[in-house]
Structure formats: structure tokens, C-alpha cells
Length: 289
Image (cartoon, rainbow, N blue to C red; front, side, top):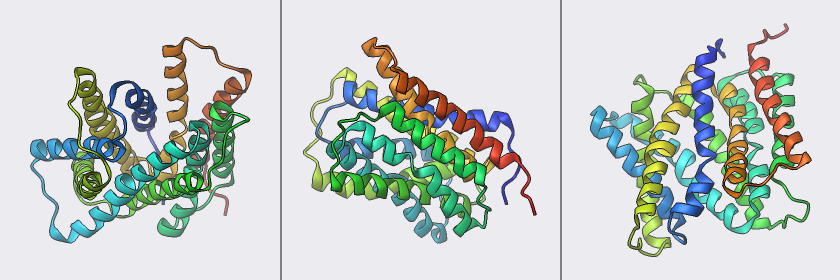
């Protein structure tokens, strides 16, 4: 069952989706275009190998199948669905569909971990979903069936990986577990990148800096905080923090473009911050018998 969470652990975990909110800006401004699977590969595999080189801790053979499943869910399938949705849907639609993930986590945590579904947590998930829609969705957004399906599969994939990361937590430090999952996801992405994407072009200094950010900050650091959070505060508390990612993305976009927030966006941010608080509060309340 879920355990009480220290505010420090919640704050550290919240840094992960906050960092991920910068991914869109980094990808569009610093990275070469037209190689999405290669970008996903370079985000996961080098960071995982670097951590493995530093930590020098290999998994036992009985853990390899589970790590391939976790790496496939949290990185391979999720990243591929994310890029398909990004190409076929407006960003607002993709982000709104991705925001269903906290609600999916609540259902899967009930099915796979036996956690109770708390009504306040469901309310927080719905409020966050509406908040993301207000923040990023435009009235004339086009709906592509393949893009919608990809976004929903991506949300289910990441939600399943989040819950299974708690269920299949090995007796090693979270940073070691992070390195194993990054490598597993990267290994599965490698043949897909070779088959799908054109060769990597010559990299500029901006490209290199973008890849370093995605690999070290958006990859190794953010996923360490993410998996550490799953281990310490539980997936049911981690999932609502994901709503902070689109907030960061919008604020960074406003900072770069020097735009102003519209009234619906302000309402969306209030709903998102309220849902994040309510999601944590819901898990701290004792269940009624």
C-alpha cells in the first residue's frame, strides 16, 4: 500500500516533468530534424551507458526480461508513439491526450498493485486534464485518427511502465535501476533508428549541446528523479506531477517568443497547480473503511 511521502521527495520528483517540459523547445531549436527515433535513441542509450560505466553494476540474467519490458514501455514504445502523435497532431491535442496518463496510472495501480482508487485523486486527474486542455488546446485543432491512437497508446505505455517500475523494483539504488532501463530502451530503439531514420547528419555545436541536454539532463537526471520518486512516493503520487510538463513548455515558449498568457491559459495553469496539490492531498488522506 502507499506510504506517507516527504515534501522533499515530492519536490525532487516534480523536477523530472519540469525538466521534460523543456524537451520540445530543445528539440525544435537545437536538434537536427527528420530523425525522431535517432533522437530518442541518443536521449536514452548514451546516458544509460555512462551511468553504467560510473556505477559498475550489472543486472542478473533473471532481471533482463523485466528490464526489456520496462525499457520498451517507458522509452521505446512511448517515444515512438510520442513522435508519431507530434507529427500527426497539433501539439495541444497530443499534450491533452497524454494528460490522460495520471488517470490510467490510478486504474493500473489498482489492478497491478492493489492500491485503492481514491475519489479525490480521480477528481485531481480530471481537473489536470481539463487544465492541460485549457493551457495548450486550440479550438481549430485538427484530429487525426492515427495520431490520436498513437497518443493514447503512448499514455498507456508510460502509465504501465510507471506502475510496473514499482511492482518490479530491484534491490538496487534508483540510479542503477535508471541506468538499466535507459540501456534496455536504447537497445530496443537502436535497430528501429537504423531502419527508419536517415543517417545522422554532421552535427553543429548547437546540435551537440541539445543532445547533451536531452541525454544528461532530460535523460539521466530526470529519469533518475522519476524512478526514485516511483520507489519513494509511489506511482499514484508521481503521475499527477506530470501535469507540470506542459506548464513548463508553455512558460518557456512565452519566454522565448515574449508572448502573453490568454485567459484560458491562466485558468488552465490554476487548474493544473490545483490538481497537482489535490493529487498529493488525496493520497495523504486515510481511506474510510
